[in-house]
Length: 339
Image 1 (cartoon, rainbow, N blue to C red):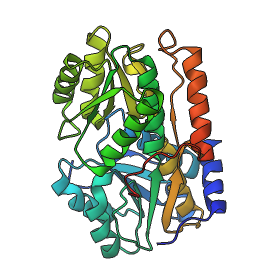
Image 2: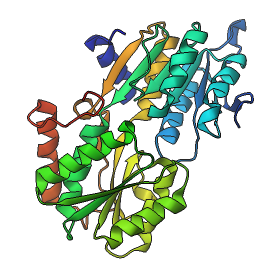
Image 3: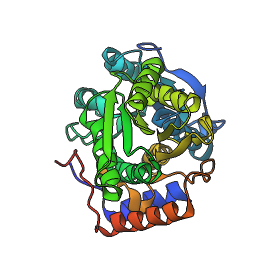
Image 4: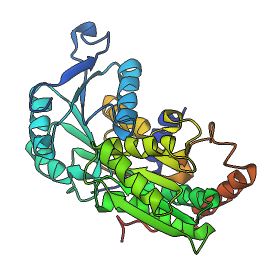
């Protein structure tokens, strides 16, 4: 698999930063769909919307592509992992030219269906075990770098000296966040204790809340959620518990519980989705991996709009220094995908 050149990455970033087994559910389409008698490019996103996380963020990029590039967009929401393959088949049977599937659980899907449908362009996110394919591009967000900064902030704010993390499932794609979080926390406070728990699913907020409350009982006063829809339970626990704060993930979740979500570690899934579709529309598709990290704005913390009574100017200045050190390479954060 060949990598994008630095020129292609720069161009992509310039553009970005200025019901399962059935047919795709049409969510929005371009008004130019049949302009000039030509068929418009059709892009399908496979994933569960409404998670206030990376799926919703990716969908915003799809909507932008619809509005700015004139593509037709639709979504298929698989009920279980067993439905991933049938969702791809439904997308292709529905005329998809582009299929986007974000998340580390889809490696086997890419391995099978990229080869089965060589005339369809596939785009993924952080599914590093997928085989090389000429019709597959994979975005890699430096979740470990953004999580390092989240952990550093947690250590700065924590009064108990104990912080926590709640993951969706126990897998490298989640532990990549947690390892970075732990390293960032210990960079600020070598003696801090980091507790962790795994919900076992991405769609169980009740259990996410239960685990967050248990970690709080064990002393954690800041909890980083890396659990998709299950993480909404972590935020709910923080909202209802004095002295407990949450850190959001993937999308900006600060406004879900203003003042109780210290920040969110966002990854620009919207830019990833838009960039990929634009490459196909422009005829510039190249298979390979493109990286989005701290240095190019691919991952970052939000701006503490609701938490400035807790996150001080001194903390923000220290975080800026940490970001500069990650960018320069002075701080090297462990990446489980490369371990």
